[in-house]
Length: 113
Length: 113
Image 1 (tube, each protein chain N blue to C red):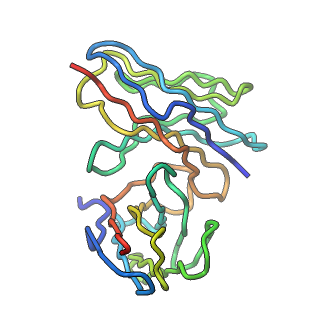
Image 2: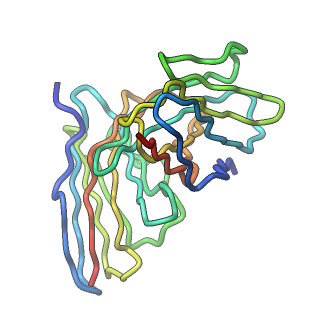
């Protein structure tokens, strides 16, 4: 069974540009979560989608946005990139809105120059 | 808001020895779940162990066990017979109700041969 897959693995952008990151959850999982892992800051919650709806949003500016498609895959968009957006972006999935295990992808490393 | 604190940014242990990683959390909820996740170097995050708050018995998974002290809001991870493959970042995490998983900042564990 395929795990959570993320693309691209690495992405290099310059300040002011836009970045789009993609995530495919494990088959059958309806919830997708996005986390930002910046050096020394641990994992910061960004967004949570379930059944196509945004369930919760972390303390990030509106230039961080996303959506979930009918097949439960998701994309994260970051507009007007800033240097401090450089981080590893992790996607995770779970089966529904339950307090269970999250399954993580390997992440997309975004570098903003 | 729930918070998770890991007070040990880095730790090291000799191979075959035992090490304990600390975690404290803050919540007003009575029903919640606690997790330890492991992130090996350049590899994806995986679940190590999970504890339901309503269970008094401490969870155990092979060489990994927890010491869950609900009144003290403490959730430490003990790794017995440490192996080189245990070298990783370890994150303590908390979830309650309809909120996303909240992570601590992590502890970098190095197992030394």
